[in-house]
Image (cartoon, rainbow, N blue to C red):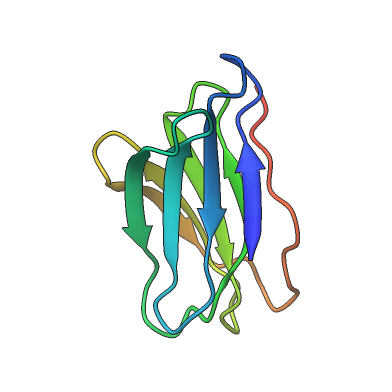
Length: 99
Protein backbone atom coordinates (compact mmCIF):
# COMPACT_ATOMS: atom_id res chain seq x y z
CA UNK A 1 0.00 0.00 0.00
CA UNK A 2 2.86 2.42 0.80
CA UNK A 3 6.66 2.58 0.83
CA UNK A 4 9.34 4.94 2.15
CA UNK A 5 13.16 4.79 2.08
CA UNK A 6 15.38 6.51 4.66
CA UNK A 7 17.32 9.47 3.32
CA UNK A 8 20.72 8.87 4.92
CA UNK A 9 23.12 5.97 5.18
CA UNK A 10 23.02 5.20 1.46
CA UNK A 11 19.25 4.59 1.46
CA UNK A 12 19.88 1.24 3.12
CA UNK A 13 16.54 0.88 4.96
CA UNK A 14 12.97 0.92 3.72
CA UNK A 15 9.56 0.64 5.37
CA UNK A 16 6.42 -0.68 3.74
CA UNK A 17 2.80 -1.08 4.85
CA UNK A 18 0.07 -3.55 3.96
CA UNK A 19 -3.71 -3.68 3.59
CA UNK A 20 -5.95 -5.78 5.86
CA UNK A 21 -7.91 -5.88 9.12
CA UNK A 22 -4.65 -5.81 11.10
CA UNK A 23 -2.12 -4.53 8.56
CA UNK A 24 1.58 -5.22 8.96
CA UNK A 25 4.48 -2.80 8.68
CA UNK A 26 7.89 -4.09 7.63
CA UNK A 27 11.31 -2.44 7.91
CA UNK A 28 13.86 -4.10 5.65
CA UNK A 29 17.31 -3.73 4.15
CA UNK A 30 17.11 -2.48 0.55
CA UNK A 31 20.33 -4.24 -0.44
CA UNK A 32 19.87 -7.70 1.08
CA UNK A 33 16.09 -7.85 1.57
CA UNK A 34 16.67 -8.86 5.21
CA UNK A 35 13.81 -7.93 7.56
CA UNK A 36 14.82 -5.64 10.43
CA UNK A 37 11.40 -5.29 12.10
CA UNK A 38 7.71 -6.09 11.76
CA UNK A 39 4.80 -4.35 13.49
CA UNK A 40 1.06 -4.94 13.35
CA UNK A 41 -1.42 -2.09 13.54
CA UNK A 42 -4.54 -2.55 15.60
CA UNK A 43 -7.48 -4.55 14.31
CA UNK A 44 -9.77 -2.61 11.93
CA UNK A 45 -7.00 -0.21 10.90
CA UNK A 46 -7.83 -1.35 7.34
CA UNK A 47 -4.49 -0.34 5.77
CA UNK A 48 -1.34 1.69 6.17
CA UNK A 49 -2.15 4.75 4.07
CA UNK A 50 1.15 6.58 4.66
CA UNK A 51 4.52 5.64 6.11
CA UNK A 52 7.81 7.40 6.91
CA UNK A 53 11.12 6.06 8.17
CA UNK A 54 13.46 8.35 10.09
CA UNK A 55 16.80 9.24 8.48
CA UNK A 56 18.68 7.01 10.97
CA UNK A 57 16.08 4.19 10.58
CA UNK A 58 15.33 4.15 14.33
CA UNK A 59 11.65 5.17 14.01
CA UNK A 60 8.75 4.48 11.68
CA UNK A 61 5.63 6.65 11.51
CA UNK A 62 2.39 5.26 10.06
CA UNK A 63 -1.07 6.58 9.29
CA UNK A 64 -3.91 4.08 9.01
CA UNK A 65 -7.17 4.07 7.06
CA UNK A 66 -9.49 3.70 10.05
CA UNK A 67 -12.25 6.29 10.46
CA UNK A 68 -10.01 8.29 12.84
CA UNK A 69 -6.82 7.92 10.73
CA UNK A 70 -4.50 7.18 13.65
CA UNK A 71 -0.85 8.24 13.40
CA UNK A 72 1.53 5.87 15.21
CA UNK A 73 5.29 6.08 15.73
CA UNK A 74 7.17 2.83 16.40
CA UNK A 75 10.68 2.35 17.79
CA UNK A 76 12.24 -0.01 15.23
CA UNK A 77 14.78 -1.52 17.63
CA UNK A 78 12.43 -2.29 20.55
CA UNK A 79 9.11 -2.61 18.72
CA UNK A 80 7.46 -0.24 21.19
CA UNK A 81 4.86 2.35 20.26
CA UNK A 82 6.40 5.76 21.01
CA UNK A 83 3.31 7.83 20.16
CA UNK A 84 -0.22 7.26 18.90
CA UNK A 85 -2.86 9.90 18.25
CA UNK A 86 -5.98 10.47 16.17
CA UNK A 87 -5.30 12.17 12.88
CA UNK A 88 -8.89 13.32 12.38
CA UNK A 89 -11.58 12.56 9.82
CA UNK A 90 -9.55 13.44 6.70
CA UNK A 91 -7.32 10.78 5.09
CA UNK A 92 -3.54 11.14 5.48
CA UNK A 93 -1.57 10.52 2.30
CA UNK A 94 2.01 11.39 3.32
CA UNK A 95 4.21 11.52 6.41
CA UNK A 96 7.78 12.80 6.90
CA UNK A 97 10.32 13.20 9.68
CA UNK A 98 11.90 16.64 10.11
CA UNK A 99 14.43 18.13 12.49
